[in-house]
Length: 129
Image 1 (spheres, rainbow, N blue to C red):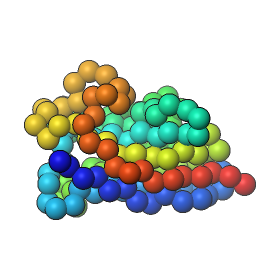
Image 2 (cartoon, rainbow, N blue to C red):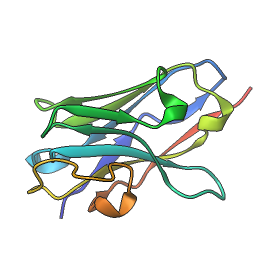
Image 3 (cartoon, rainbow, N blue to C red):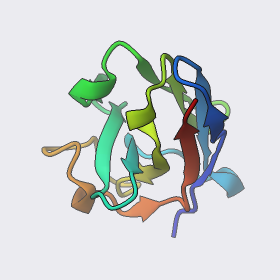
Image 4 (cartoon, rainbow, N blue to C red):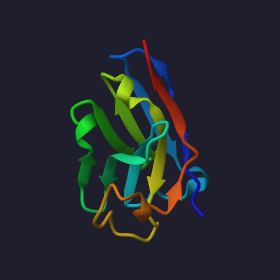
């Protein structure tokens, strides 16, 4: 079992910024495919950004391209989501997700939540004036 812990959520005004962090306590190495998903009230959970360190690729959903940046720090055992120019439509609970530790990468369907084995509890982001 891999535990994921998110932090960094909060309330900001439109145009503001937040940086989300996802850490894996206990010294467990990050998997080769880590993702950020979000779930708005009444909506399905959707993929936001994925980093495939196994194959050196990064993916973003269209609505966040140019505003969000996913990164990974193996020395800190953490994955980050830098969010800029936040919009009210970004309001959601954000979840960190990981595939199996033994996977070489993300495989197909990087935004398919069924491909991810481990999930954090989520951190809430509210964008409102």
